[in-house]
Image 1: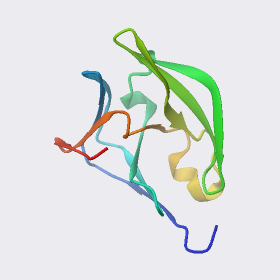
Image 2: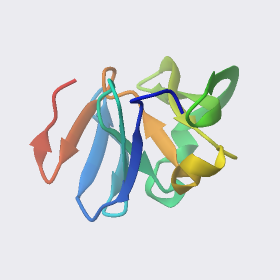
Image 3: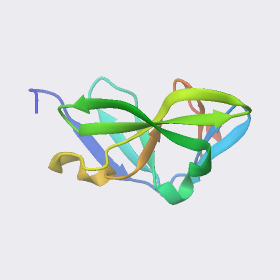
Length: 121
């Protein structure tokens, strides 16, 4: 890892919900928190806690030197497609194995609540 760059992966029991256009996309008491130097906390959800029927895989991929290769999904809500809104590290590098296969939403593009409190975008 780059000098000074850290990733911390923590299982939580917080009640976390994600909304888009008034539609609930995810709800979990088993989200995994990922804190990374210079980035906002990200909430990774077990697939069973996500409304995957609203998601469509895309061909978009990114690579992070600290987590590995990410795959993306778009969400269709209210007849509108929100491109590449969700991502997952299906087979992350060993240091990030705690998020393998979990789904994460751009909090900048959704409404996130933690224990009933809206989180800043």
